Structures are given as structure tokens and as C-alpha cells.
Image (tube, rainbow, N blue to C red; front, top):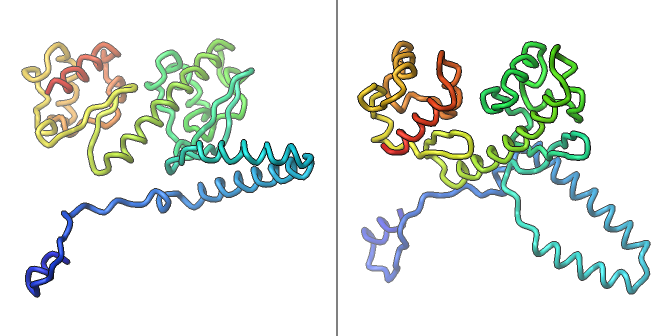
Length: 254
């Protein structure tokens, strides 16, 4: 608008910079509930620091103040949604759950070793979403029959991987707003307009005829109609990890 005004009502010696789409400020992207958690954490930190400061002798205060200043300068600003909302434990290990995952759906297909375990737990209205998980996963298997401590351990290990994958996905989505993606495990593909129009046919995608046929039968005929989370496709008959890897590799090649 400024450039138009200058051109119409000039001459004005003004160089107008190239237009750039506005970007939302990260400071404004925090949810109010997350901001409250961050403020509470800051309050606890300040209270603890003040108590420690008051208990130190003058020489110790000077050293502590110097260390605190250096640590503060080195701390990276967290992206919105990354504030720790709760902690989940298993024996001597722990996982910090970021705010954006507080009610995340725990899709069983995302947990290769624990898929059946999670399906069984879901039947008992347990472990369907992150907020349903207990603070300590020791004994989680007791909700269902014929499972044991090994299943608790496997699930905790896979939950750690799940959280790291979700963090990476969130970073990508925040860095590239407005773009569409296909996610598979810890990898992703950008869905271009051309890719979205590729037909889901046995001519375009070889070696996975059963999956293609089942997708076509329910009206999914183009790549753009596939779910963002490709592992969901494992629910179809005779579709396993090998099939999904073939599909993902061929999508990347398009």
C-alpha cells in the first residue's frame, strides 16, 4: 500500500522494501494455560534462587551471581508448546512431556513393539491419550491380562522416541507454516500441488497392489487424499511396515 501511495502521489524520494508476508510473533503464540505454567515455573525458580542467595555469605553470592548470569545468557528461548507440563517416570528414568503433547492421541501404530499392548489398554479406557498415562508407568501392564513388566519397559522406551519425533514435527510445522506434509516415523515429505494430484494406481505405485486397491475402494484415489500420518494406513488388511516403507519411498521419488 505504501508503494502504491508513493507511485500515485509522488515524487517522494523513498525506497520501499520488497513485500514480506507477516509472521506471527512467537511471544503471542503461547496458549494462556501454557503461559501460566511458565510463570509458575519462573516464580518457583526465583523463590529458590532468593532463598539460596540469602543463605550464602557475601563471597559466595558474588560467584553465584556470576554463574547465574552466564547460565541465563546461554539458555535458548523455547518455542511455544515446548514448556514441560508434566513428568512421567519408569524406574530410574523419566520423560518430560511438553505442553503441546498434553492430550496427544497415542496412535498404537506409532509404537511398533507396543501396538497390541496399547490396543488392549485402549479397550480398558487406558493409555489412549497422553493425559491418561499415570505418573509412573511401572505396573501399567496390570490393567490387562497376559502382559508383564517387559511391556511397560518397551512402551516407555517407545514413548521416548514418540516424543522426540513429535518435537521435530512441531519444529517443522512452525518453521514452514501453510505447507502440507506426509509424516512417517522420523521422516517427512512436503506435499506439493503436483504430488497431491498423482493418482493412487498400480501404474504409479508398484509392489503394493493390495493397499492401492483398498484405498481406491473407499474413495481415496489421489495422493492428496492420503492421511498426514502415513502409519495410519497400517490398519488395512495385509499392510505392514514393509508396505508403508515402499509407499513412502515412492512418494519421495515423485
